[in-house]
Amino acid sequence: MTTLVTVAGGSCPVAREVTRRAASSLGVPAVATWAADLPAALRRVVGSYAVVPLLLAEATALSGSPGRALGPHPLLAAAQASRLLAAGVRPGRPVVLVGAQPVDRLHGAATLLADTWTGPVQVATLDAGGPAMIDVVRRGEVVSPYLLAPGPLHDRVRDEALAGGAAVVAEPIGPHRFVADLVARRFRAQVHATAA
Image (tube, rainbow, N blue to C red):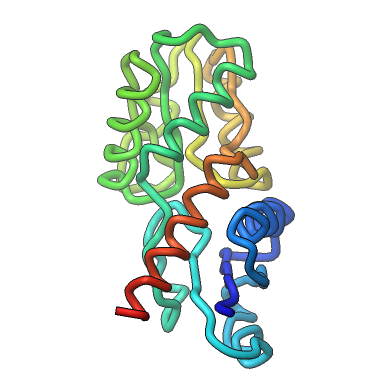
């Protein structure tokens, strides 16, 4: 039986929960690890494995890790929309998507969120390579972090957005069932490709 191995940028409860949910739906064993421990984790796996990076964009830090990043993807956009609804935001209201990924990846995620949310979505980035939150977020706006887990980056998004006058800052995507569904799809695709 093939083991699901997920790899995140660092140790993260969200990564462990997503991995648990995906493995449960697949009926396979699983290991959740992080980039620095990936080689050691793979040595401990008995039999075959499929590695699914739990990253929203490609990362050179995971060299040697097969598989592509999770996003952008319609299931991630649906999870973001769910977080916006949970924050009390009405569908269709304008949203600012903020992430730490390259701006071209954020534009892809914003397009998918706009389709799902049926409302306009602007992009702001924590990276120096794109529009900064201070230049995009205006008083009364809604911010949707394009982040998988809470932590320092989400704290920064929340703090800077609220300082800029944002009315609502949604929670990160988190261990949403849609994320686990996407991980399961990536696992099945790898297993199928290996068998072909």
